[in-house]
Every structure is written in structure tokens, then in C-alpha cells.
Picture 1 (spheres, rainbow, N blue to C red):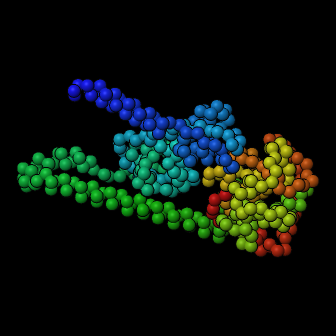
Picture 2: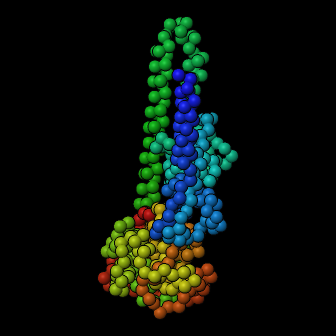
Picture 3: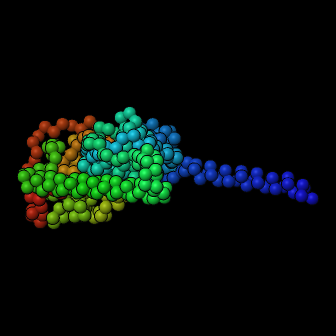
Length: 401
């Protein structure tokens, strides 16, 4: 009687195993998402921890910088697994540069763990070619290119396993220490070293913060009015015909202040909203919301006064400015610390333009997007509006563009 039930039980086990394996495959399979307003390959790559080149390759996109159409279905491949190598070295280090990417493996195809700024403390534990495996102050680990790391001295951390193995017989023979007591002693030593490294990392972090504050106070004290806190030169403002641009350029030099919409400074969307409000056009508060207003314009049809939107540090649309003609735009720059003019084809903004919107019709002629005409005339003298005259003498602060 029992033999008759064995084939049935065997079949049930096979079906259960097959179902479990299919569920496991579906759980780890690629997923499909629909593109919404402000989405880009950069924002999708950060959200799902996959490189944008992998997303472009899976979806047959030849240009990873192209603007995605709203409503389009995009396949997100599985992110590569994190790579961890055994600890072979222990050297103190610090990040060299701003917004340096820490990745999950020794390759740019691996997803991002975090972004670190200049001076952030690290501990180098292994290397693979030009990549270094590092421990972060938060307790996580990742990989970073060697060119973005300033190496320090070696950290003395004894190998407790080998030390305990070599010394254990002598201790047992001379002092008759029990194995449990030896394990407790080794554990206590490990805790002391871990606490010492933690205090050292905290001290390095405090020193880094103090240096950043000192650099900020020094630049604020010794810089002239309207000069940015770094050496990036500002291009000359083009000759303009649009009343919107004349008003916008009148605020050059006003300090950047996150969350401000006038009075004591601007952030990027606060600046555009303030300028267009003076011309009778009401805009939403944030750059992401302003991106959904007005008429969509191609790069070849840009005119003075059009809003230009960028993807910078946050996902989606995170920065906005006003096109000024001749391949230039005026905006409240967090890195420059004030309202200034920059070029669309400059090193930072070249590949970050994500859209153009026209919220007010102007009489200016369209300006070519890729070959802007050179500026032949000197910068026009534009006086500051009376209601905002106190803003033009302010200087910038650090923030997110």
C-alpha cells in the first residue's frame, strides 16, 4: 500500500522544486519601468544601481545621453554583484576631489555606493589594477579609482588569528589559560583596535570639516564682490533684445542661497521664478515643476528667454537657467556662489542639458544650439532694478545647483 504512494509523493516534490526555482528566477529577472517626467538614464542608473551604459545596451540605445520620451518602456537589467577582495593592506587615505563616485566593484560598469567630497576619510584594504578597495567611515566598503585618492601611512592592525595561534601553546603551558579565556582576550583586543580606528576616522572627518569651513571663510573675506569662490572664468554676457534677459542679467552677482527666491539671494528655480514674475508669468517653485510648464522647444529653435533644464546631482531635473543667446545661459549657480553667465557647451553642462521650455514668447531670433555665434560686442551695461538693488552686492555660498 505504501509503495503505491511513493510515485505520487515524488511527483509532488518535483512540482514544488520546479515552482520554487521559477519563482527565484522571476525574482532576480530584469524589470521594466515606464519613463516619467524628468526621468533619464542617469536617474534610472542611480535608482536601480545599474550603469547607464548597461541600460542603454539592453534597450538598444546608441547614445547614453539621449533624452528619453515620456511613457516609453525601459528594461532595467540586474545590477552586478558587489566585489569584495580579502584584506591585503591597511592604509589611511582621503578623497581627492569633489563628488567622487564609490562603486560596488573595480569597474565603471558597477553601480554606485555613494558620492564623497574632498577630504572624506578612507581606509585602503586591497587593490585591483588602478582601482582601490576602501572602507568608508559609515562602515560600508566599495571601490574607487586610485587617481582620486590621497594615500597616507600604514595602519598597524595585528593579525590576531596568527598571533593567537602562535602564542596559544606557550600561554597554555605556562599559565594554564583556558581556551574560553583566550578567545575573550582576543575579542577584547579586536574591540580596542576597532574603537581606535573609529576615533581616528572621526578625528579625520572633524579636521576635514574645519578645513572646509576655513576655506569658505577665507574666500568670503578676501574675494571681491561678484567673484566666484573658484577660478572658473565667467564668459561675457551677450547682447540681448529680450526684456526677460535684460531683467535676468541685471541680477548678475547676486549671491546663491538654497531655498531663496529674492531679497537676500536666489537658488536656481527661485531666480527664474523671480525674473518671470516681474514679466507677468507665474512659475512653480521647483525646477522639476517648472519643467512641466510652457511649450517644449527643440535645441535648434532656442530663443532668448527660454528655460533650459539640466540634470546635476539629484535624480531627474535638478537645475534650471534662462537661455541668453550665443550658446550661453544665465542662472543662479551653487558652485559659482552667485547669479552668473555660463556656456551650454562648457565642460560640466555639456552633456547635462535635458530639455527646453518656452513660457513667454519673445521677439528674438532662434539661436543655433551647437554652433553659437561668437560675442563681438562688449558686455552691455544693465542697471540693477530698484526693488532688488541690495542683492547685487551679495556673495555666494556653497550649495546644490
